[in-house]
Image (cartoon, rainbow over all chains, first blue to last red):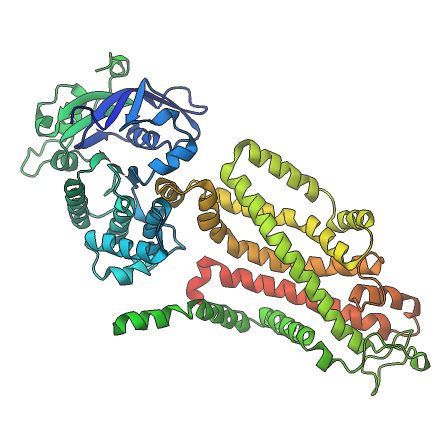
Length: 279
Length: 296
């Protein structure tokens, strides 16, 4: 495990017609571990995730290196990219209400991944999909297979989404705020399922989130982003020892049970952080 | 085991149940019920034309020209002694053929152009929509006249001409629909699964556009009938002695003052069928609108 699975060096992304880069000089590597990317809204977390899968047709993406296994992602043709998406790298989207096609049965959408990437009959794909639904702890998967997205609950929808994205056994999964749309009680359940699957299959995970506690509990390493830059990289366990004032600001802005009742600290944003030398 | 057989039994007739629901919804409002009934009569008449018609539509009998409606000839006879009722009945076949052929040509073309333009956007979108605009900038009857004049007058050429002129509104509609959910998350999810653009268009986008395109096609059929009748009237569509309704009006025009039945009955037929299609289209718009699903 010398060579990391994913290597990103000086990634820059600029949306068409935007005056500045949305993401600037982001560098990180990822092995078979769980990496969290944290930051406030608009800091470019999701943009990084989508750029890795080349899902930003209107944006200019440049990087010194953007390597995934043995593939230079930026030089691949769209046709080659089709074989990567879903098969070797996939992404769990935020809200199952919007990310499942409302007019297709959920099972068909899950099986679609398998049909797309393997030569097999529809019956095989169906069996695979039902197995996968079972492994995301959906009770009576054969029944759920034939339901439409509006007939299942949000937590179930997100588990279906996970099943859909893990079915072809990718080696890297990007979870883009996988639990933001779920309520707190379901959140932990979904995360545990995701965590177990990622651990068992040895999948690399990038967890994009704005929830520091969640990232602290579920990830090995944490990347803190501010305004399109990575301001600090930390082991999740060392999050309390953060050096950068922005990270400390984020931590201080969190309420604690039994903590002081004084008003929470207001996050400060200093313009010089934008200009700082890359970490 | 029993559970799985139950499920397969339940799953099979689902489209039929859905169709039944839609029909029941349509029958509930008087206007769309009228449309539905008139069109069923039209279709049944066309299928069983040999049984319904009382006479051969082509046989001439110069002894009984221009007879007023009466016992022997329900709707009277024309200038060559042919039974008008039988000609109307056989004419319904021609009308249905025109509608059917035009629809199966226009629907796919419009869908294909609209969804690809909407999905890919950019330059392709601009080029395709400008071509569509060129077609839209002529009145459809004038454009089909030009096409028929170029291709030569016949029923088949009339169908081709009408098809060539009636796809642009469908393409526009499909494009507008596509634009609304092109950026939706489930399209992104399909791409994340590794689906190619073609697959996304066919499996995700076309089914989403289908209801509104279907409604538009139904509403379009009235225009198609009128255009076909217009072409027939001008002598550019179906050629004599074919019992096409528009052509019947054209030949009957000369005797209109004395023998009103020559033009009235074909006119009523054209009016009621195109009205029926309009009303049915209106009803379908309500029936297929997902916002009104719960009213069913």
